[in-house]
Length: 398
Image (cartoon, rainbow, N blue to C red):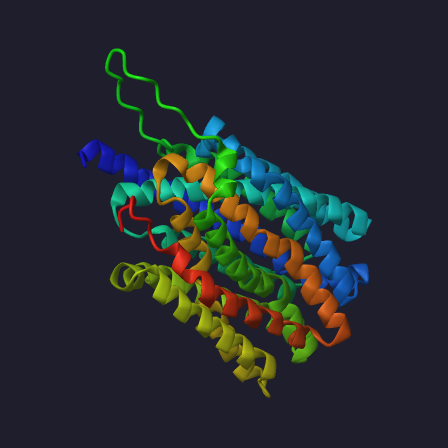
């Protein structure tokens, strides 16, 4: 690698970290305030689950087209544009705190659309710089996402403690993200290397349709794997603080801190995960992580005391740390098909955000939110079974 390419790659790495951190920060700023929205709008657990469904609907509209959009416009322009939309959507959500459920739902659909497309674009860029480096780094980008969520959750806990109004808090976050991210991602590297010049008379290369990825068994299995971990991760985002408050009887501040503990554990797992991946490979390590997440959830649900429940959140966060980022890397193993395959895997994975919130909410209405979390344990069993699909194909480098 030349000095120029090395410098360009490292600038791209820093810009990719910024994109991941920012999307985590804005998402956690919203997620940490869910208990206050639930109380302000007078929602039951089931009704809250249906409101949270709005985010998934927006994401699932964006994700199937995200691969083609990134291929056409590039990951840099896609992230910059969607960051502005994300900020505008959060501003609408903030106004809906006083205006009512319809405005919140409108804002969350747009928020989910921007988050979904942003997610695909930054993962494509992450896979590009990972290939340039020749070693695992994707989990650390997702650690950046988790770091952003930790910062967002801790700031939210402080805002709750200080009594800062929810609309003011979220409007400031929205403006900050919309203004800063387009500047930060200017250093993204090109998504693909330029094609070599063809010999005279040689046939032009034919690009496969992005829709072809939907017919590939390995891509679909990776999508199912990512779905299980997205369900575990998304459930922690949407329900960890609610479960602590309603199930374990904690205060709002302690419930928000419990959510932050999950995120801290997830961040640690993602930061140290690349070393373990380089040493032990994907499939076996991911199976161990799934078992760890299931054990943490069982402890969280059945803990007789709040401190033990917090221990459960640690294992919950650690166990779910690597599933989503490694699934994205696995989808992008072959550079020429990376955007379309990441789009497919992300689309399937985000189905967890479509079905997860209402499933947990409806089960919570019938049983309790804590008992509803046992559905995630079932998902981790499925993850153990399909994890071998993440092994690099024979045509890709390890």
